[in-house]
Structure formats: C-alpha cells, structure tokens
Length: 231
Image 1 (cartoon, rainbow, N blue to C red):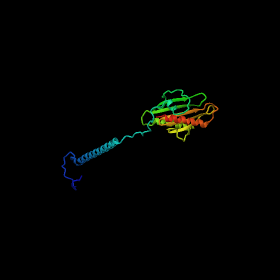
Image 2: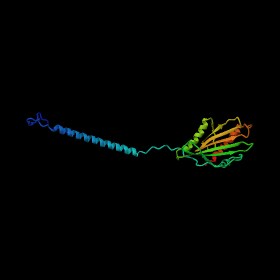
Image 3: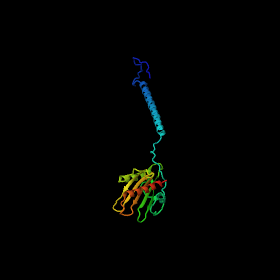
Image 4: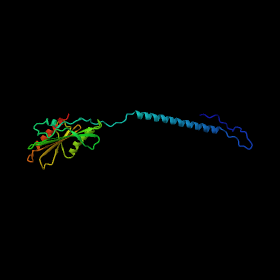
C-alpha cells in the first residue's frame, strides 16, 4: 500500500483553552487497517489449511484399505471312511470298525477339527492304526487349516521324525517316526496333505519280529493308501 506525500511541517491545529488538542485519527485508522488486513490474511491461511486438510482427507479416504494376505485355501472338506483307506491295500488284517469321522476338541479358535480313527488287527499278524485330523478354517482363505496340519508335521520333525525323500502318495511332506522298541517293533509315518494331518503306525506281530525294513515298508504302504483316499 503506497503512502501519500510527506510534508516537512505539521498542519495547523486549532488550540482550545483548557482542553488538549484533539488527537489525529491517522494512526488509529492505520492500526485498524492493519488489524483488518491481518485478520484477512489469517482467514486466508485458515481457508488454505482447510483446503489442504480436505484434500489430504480425500486422498486418505480414496486409498484402498490394507487387507491381510490370503493364505492357502482348505483343500479338503471331509475325511474318508476307514474302509476306503483299507480298500487301497492288499492283505490287511480285518478292520475293527468303520465309523465316520467325528468332531475333535481343539484350543485353536481359528479352526474346526474332526478326527478319523482306524485300526486293522488280527492275532498273529502285524497290525495297523491310522489317525486323520481335518482342520477346517473358520475364515475361508485364511490358511489356518493348512497351517494347523503343517505345524503338526513340523512338531514331529522337531521331536526327531526323519523326513522321507521318496514320494508318499499325494502327501505334501512325510517323515518316519521312531518309537520305543522295548516291546513289539513299531514303525510310524507322520504326514500332512493340505489341511489334513495324518499319523500311521504299524506294529509287528510279536516281539520276535525285528525286521525294521519290512515294518517301515508296511507303514509307507498304509500312509500311501491314506493319502490317496483323500479327495
């Protein structure tokens, strides 16, 4: 804002006896103008801040919300019957029972667990037992079911089970499990396949049978039958 011309002398102000001369309104007007300009500047800054804030808010609202990465989907929704497993092997002892899978308890609130238990037994013959756990994710696509099955296998390996290099049916991973051999010889296989955790145990006919190679071969065959029965 440009100022007017400056004068080297003070303009004449009339004197009033007994009263001070009236004050010039120039400085007061200038102060008022500056205050008004300041308010306008602040108001403008406030409006600018409002627009910036609004723009930022719109950008934040437009940005897609982050979601948890999808996990492996559940591969299986049900378990086979024991008879379906046994039909894939030759010379098995008689099946003790052919009950369907039943709900199993679990402390994991992210899954629903069901179990299938099978046993094939005959006096004077080696026997076989099978346990299958189906872990169904409560939240589809979360990967909780397959994660549970995988953790069971990994825990067995951590406890000493030896990973099997050969392919066992359609199993994702499988391992040989050793048991206390003070009694009858036992050979086991622990494997997982999708969202199913499986344990197979073969027991020799009596304490005189110490043929470990044959025992493991039988355990692998039963594990393969169990794996291929999953559909």
